Length: 118
Image (tube, rainbow, N blue to C red):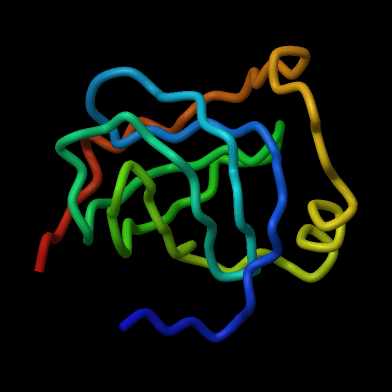
C-alpha cells in the first residue's frame, strides 16, 4: 500500500533523471507533489531505495530516492521537499510538446558520495 503526505498533481513536464551510472534518461514527469513525482522509464535495473537525481523542466537537479517501480513507471520521493514557490511555479506549467524543450543542466557527480542501501 502506498501512502504519501501530499496529493500529486497530474502534469506533463519534460524531465531527466540520472542514477549516477550510465546515461541520464529523458522522461516526462506525469505527477508532481512537493514531496515527489512519478514518471515512465525504460530502466530495467532500478530498484526501490536507489538514489537518483531529477531535473524538472530546467530546474534541478533534485536529489530523490526511488520508492516504487511498477509497469514501466517510477515513483520517487525528493530528499528535500520542493518549496512552496517552486511547486506553485510547476503547478502553472504544462508543456504539450516535449521536443521543443531542451534540458541543459548538469548532474552532480555522486560517485564519491557515500551511498547506503539499507
